[in-house]
Image (cartoon, rainbow, N blue to C red; front, side, top):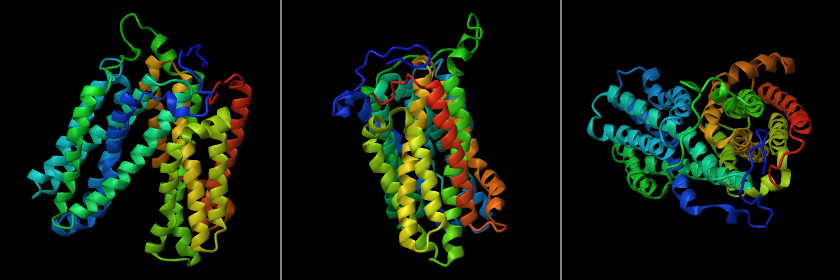
Length: 415
């Protein structure tokens, strides 16, 4: 298949019924294992209360930072991953990432009398996660093309979501005895490290962006029309997507539909749908083809409109499931579209740029949504937030349809 750069894939387009025949499982299995730890620290939120009790003199902000530091460090490390891809083979970047998470994860088991050891632990985990999130997608882009790339991206997303679910249960169970026992989950990295070392191909180095004899050719390979467009689009998509988490609780409480426990139950289904979607994304891609992203966006817009008008927890749950469907499609499609828009030796940096805009979009989501929300009412009560996010998604949908019809008319996505 050909992309906008004129690349031609030698891999079958996947016109057959079973898209999973396109997958090289010797590569995909280690990928699905190590991505389970690309966002592993998100599962440690249940341990924060215990840490607060153990360190009563520590400020709540410092305790909360133990959980947020990995996300903050992931932003610059993601960009660094794109640069390092030009000098280091992706396999070695994966192994280094896993090693940083292993060291950071085991540190509190040996030094848990100081809260600052937990801060250092979070920083090391953040280095590993920040590199791994971007390198994982680049590994998929290097080993799979065409429809196989979309199938692999879906499997990667499903494995990551399953990993968070398993680790959340495991950390809660381990912490029942002593809070720092939760960190024992990082021992699971050891067999994953060994399997990755033996089975993951070394791969290739990416194009150098700068340096002697490179000139502007490296930058041109990365900043293609598609990469620039989808990176900017990812900022607004992330801002709209994260509105679910910042507004669903306020909306339920404002309408008097339930308490904090009800919020968790009513919204948990979106994660389940995201996992299922990841497993069947190859078929979703074949259904919507080049309009997959547009379909994801309008589905999310519909979920927000339903959530804004929900009059029961049941409706909220349905809205959450529809949101999970759209969000799952969008998260996988974004990386897939980026990989389709650049040559394989520019994949790491292109993904890093897109992820950077995504992270910034998440960070500024409340600012963007709350700037639009007053159009729908004077009070920021969750309902206006959902309406603001829906309006932003509808605008993005129109832009994406126009882009696909004008610039992607000859796209082979999903064919």
